[in-house]
Length: 396
Picture 1 (cartoon, one colour):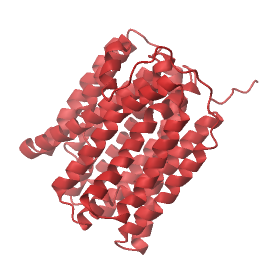
Picture 2 (cartoon, rainbow, N blue to C red):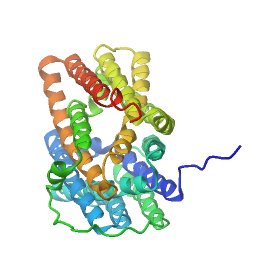
Picture 3 (cartoon, rainbow, N blue to C red):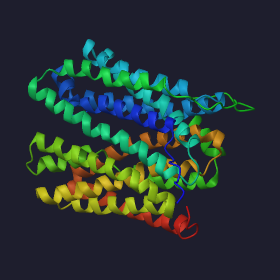
């Protein structure tokens, strides 16, 4: 029997390892970032402003740099610069504690993400065919999310041995980040011609591309953004567990468990999406999200929370990489980075809105209202995608 060639090329492996080490560096700091900021004098309000500004910068920059990548015909310089900026920002957080410096470091980290996202995902798309997109993006998400398992574990071990040594942790996070940058020098990029009839690029590039993009892209992204506007930060899930009386260690443990499930299922679900259709796997993920959030409205036991995070991890594996793979199949190849940048940029803005809506609902109506509203909207989005894509285009 003839062996089937693996869809995972050298470039895909390297990009996935780059994401793995970058996520290790980032997730080493994720559990302690709020604690560290409070430790150096930041108020809750100032932390919120810091994260809001950083995410806004990332959101606006994704479509801009995606268009630059498409127009120039280059991918690797954007990938390398983006990862380098994120790596350098880690020790910067520990060097000084002035507000302007912390804002600069955090913004540099998010700007790095904005610079690299579109170009990196376009490279993944360039290395795959329409029939292997799910496998490729799923594999990349699996290794990326494995970093979200290893990073917090490293942080827990380090802080257990050296309590409150936050600055040292920020310094040590530089090393896996720089290892990721070094790995980018092993990539052999495909030669691409610059785009003909290039237009000037603006910070509002996403809005311009939206007008000229294919109708199918706009229909799918509209549905995904409606979902994103009610898909609040995972912090609210952790707050629900905390309000049920669980310890900080239990919170981090459940967060690691969720990411482990995400990493385990991302590649198999991507491969399954290539076989039966990416839309079917994505809608399955939305149904799991709806069930998970409905469950969180009423959950109050450790076993139920664990089961719900199991479902939540499978939901993430069925949607995160799948959405990008699906989108890249709907747009012109020369616009791939722009399309991904536009989608992820708008998604960042919708995420800010989602957390604001969730906070308001929680404050005025209680936690159950927050989770049930998200579950209902998500189910409606799943029904819309089923009607408009799965029933009319069974192979999508």
